Each structure stands twice: as structure tokens, then as C-alpha cells.
Length: 117
Image (cartoon, rainbow, N blue to C red; front, side):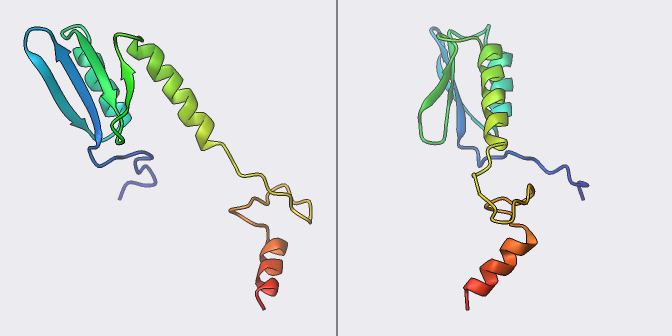
């Protein structure tokens, strides 16, 4: 048991890092998370010509030719944090501050059940 410390982000290995070297060619590595991909880029950034992070859709989301990995990581973490706090707007008819579209207050839950009948 992990005591509530389960990973918050995990992928099936579809995040890939491409390491391009003028002398030895291209090496592609699978990663289970963006954190893992960032670590791979940091470990190899000075030994390759270009390092790229490719998302599961095949889109290149980072290339070392355009940006520093530390700067990209900072922007990525900010965006991840911003998305994790985005909550769909919901106007509670009872003015409950703890009522959200995906987590209704008790009064709204009662109304929802009553409206089903």
C-alpha cells in the first residue's frame, strides 16, 4: 500500500525521447511519464546534437535546438499546475461555496434525484 502517494501521472510508454547524434544516428527511448522524458533529456543533452520529446500523438513538444530543457520543464510544470486547478464553473442555486459541477452540495444532489422522477 502506498498510503495515498500513488503517481499522479503515468503513461504507457507512449512518451518518447529522440536523441539525434550527427555521428551515431538517432536513438529513440520510451518513457512512462514526462518527468522520465525530462530526466532522459537532461542526462543526454550535452552528448547529442538534438534531443526531442515526442508525445503520444507523435507531436514534438520539446526540441533542444529551440529551447533549454530547464526552461521548458518550468513552463510544463506551470501548465500542469494550471490545468489541475481548473474547475468547471457552476452556479449553485443555494449559493454554496463548496458546490461544483462535478461535486454537488447536498441540496443540489437532492434536487438532481428529485428531477429524475
